[in-house]
Length: 210
Image (cartoon, rainbow, N blue to C red; front, side):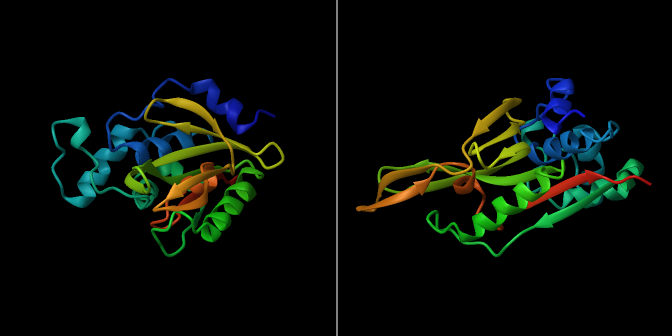
């Protein structure tokens, strides 16, 4: 039986790249359900129904569209796409914080990812873009990854990044010594350290048989 990563590679590069700057959520969701045979849910269709629900006009420029969208657009998918009745889900979140060194909640998120990937469920995870600015981190925007493989023993996770349309590999956990505001700290530069601290959102999706 083909793994999720193998199945994704079969259609990678054919509509898997996000079509605009703010489309990482619809791209990740559409790519995730495509793993389970649902092909009628495209980024464009999802955008259209989401805008209709929001009673908003679609901006002419793709890079201006989907501003303010969040993982709740999955609910829109369920309401408007009939094939979604074949998809079940589990949502993970925790109260937010802004401390890059606090990783206890991130550990819970990593465990959630590992458990679902082990069951061949696709997992979308919210990550933050951390930029080191001299002696501290700045957070500039957020991004969704679609996790396709997870190996605790090898300390690696494989995911699809819809912005460059790339299949990427990163360590699950990788500690790096850094000077932050005059003090030396161990900062996790792996997936564990990348998970968004705003709410630690992860969404697992899988196909259910009738």
